[in-house]
Image (cartoon, rainbow over all chains, first blue to last red):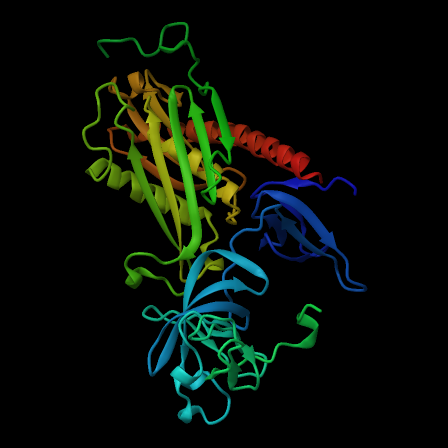
Amino acid sequence: MSPMKLCVPGESLCSEGDCNPGAGVYLRHGYIYSSLAGFVLKTTEGEKLPVISVVRETEAQLLPDVGAIVTCKVTSTNPRFAKVHILYVGSTPLKDRFRGTIRKEDVRATEKDKVEIYKSFRTGDIVLAKVISLGDIQSNYLLTTAENELGVVVAHSEAGAQMIPISWCEMQCPLTHAKEFRKVARVQPEYLEA
Amino acid sequence: MAGIELLSDQGYRLDGRKATELRKVQARLGVFAQADGSAYLEQGNTKVLAVVYGPHEMRGSRSRTLHDRAVINCQYSMATFSTAERKRRPHGDRKSTEMSLHLKQTFEAAVMTQLFPRSQIDIYVKILQSDGGNYSVCVNAATLAVIDAGIPMRDYVCACTVGFVDETPLADLCYAEESGGVSSLALALLPRGGQIALVQMDARLHQDHLEALIEAATTACKGVSKVLDEVVRQHLQEASVLTGE
């Protein structure tokens, strides 16, 4: 691999006409400057201008953004909403937990008013959700599970065993064979390991 | 001025430096593994440790959250053994609070906070040995720590404390010079664009001398930035060798 060029914050990389700005750079007065200390990466995609970005070996902290799929753990439930801790953004683990809320009306796409949080999530469940809003000063990140691919992925039954999903709204404990209600995520087959 | 001669006739200062000479700067990045970013910087005898955490979710008072950018939280403290006489109150006193505020203002000018809405970046600076130019050395150390944490910045922030003695600006004051009744000015600069992030002075200076003093401070800051640049590049080289790039 050819040695990549080192750069430091504030270093001028190229002019705006030569490349498109990517991650870790900023635009000022028609020039692209680096905002991180790392290596310059230039990627070309076909006909378009190359994209210039700066990468570091250790990934900097990622923040959940609107529309991102996040993995979270339910910490408390309430008849109106469930509070969660966001653990992963996409496939990147976060160093620090962010707090989120899944409101009752954002659990399902259909029959929103008939949702019961107790029958959708329980404390300790791992849930796949999507960020719909960064929230305002008072509230946390707002999340939704109103899609087929979103919802509970891992849940433990009252007996303590990991439950197996049987339908979009039920999971069964392998030990006691008791069924419990959850809003189950239909994970795409390509994401399941064989 | 009576008392100690701060600038001799041949142009030498108390520690043998010339008027525009900076103290020796030695720095290291990534001294702590647990923090997101950390740096240790020595400028002459002043030794400072800077640690950066973030960006992470807002802690403490949620009402201070900003919807469009990150809040920078700085804390400046001095170790009890950092001064000649054991310091009774390392933090919480007025001087420390004022310094923390200055550091916060300085870094809000350089860090690209719009990329991290509703989050908080913590910068903690601790003086291990104080020998003058405390604010400036803290700014330099904190810049390295922020770079180590991978938080995007517009440019380095370099600072220097300068003083005026016998019609001559002295760059990078040490403690003896600062307490010797010199009018000192601290300047924090973004070197590439030459933009000033913060100017601080609480002494008396004739306005005719101000231009020359700021000019001297700017030159000194650019000198500091060259040294810091070298340190950062060295660190990146070492890191890339270790990861086998």
